[in-house]
Length: 344
Ligand SMILES: O=c1ccn([C@@H]2O[C@H](COP(=O)(O)OP(=O)(O)O[C@H]3O[C@H](CO)[C@H](O)[C@H](O)[C@H]3O)[C@@H](O)[C@H]2O)c(=O)[nH]1
Image (cartoon, rainbow, N blue to C red; front, top):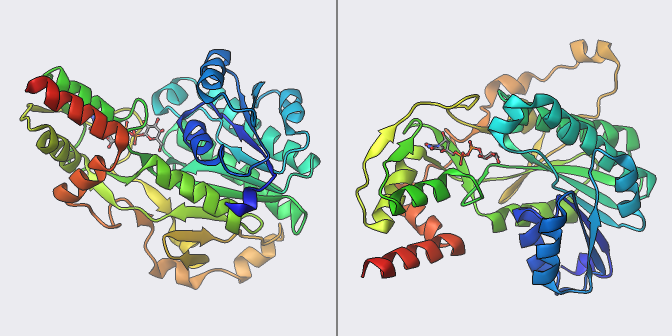
């Protein structure tokens, strides 16, 4: 990570799991300074005590408040924009709050970075932003539009704005894997929404690799996608049962509010202009101008021939493959070991 040498990095939403993991990775490199920007003073205090690192500075603020963003942006070279409301149910019930943080807040971050001549801004998005059905995905989709519109306006300005999209981060707080583990530990049935539902699966470390890849390779307005395998929820539950050596009953509870049978990481329209970079896809910005006549004369005939890239048609993990992936997650492995030793 020589490219971070002596750089000042700002992580919005820096006290979350993404910020914590990224900091672990870069705090001992030759990075100049890392600023953690977030609303929660308690989480910042806990992080400060845990880190004890002079390079890490803490800024209380809210991305909805431009002034607080501007203060933290002074002298920054690189922004990882992770601050968001990302719980599907809470965004569903409070869509204006999602709009204020994910759209207006993101606009503040992008415009502040441009005004402070920051070198690179990487915005974190999600597969739920593509063909969105819930307020979380809709507002993240609008965040992408805000980032792309700024990038289009900037052209070859010194600030490069890019976005990354990824699917479900395995074992993230509040997600299905820790839930299934808790249900097994307490002997309750595993609540399965729909055994055929699929999700892209990736580790937090892979998500961070994607963000660093974007920083190192971004051209103006790029969206980067990490290719990822997927599994059905039924197979995921089976893999967890196998590893824990239990046969806890399964209870099919049905699809929850505002969720999809499968997710999409890139649309056929985006794939027409995407560059295959091995583990990653670079979706190039559509930089056509607002000259509507062109839209009717310069369409994209290829689009109809390509499928969207979805968790239904990506590589499908088998149960043993899911087991191997789960065992590579340190937090899962710790739970499993504790469970096994308690049973002996
Ligand atoms: O009791 C449950 C809960 C979930 N699921 C299923 O497990 C899969 C994953 O569910 P998660 O709740 O772990 O993840 P989501 O895809 O719903 O969304 C997650 O990932 C998003 C990012 O893409 C947001 O971060 C969101 O808050 C987070 O929950 C889904 O198919 C869901 O239907 C079950 O079968 N049973």
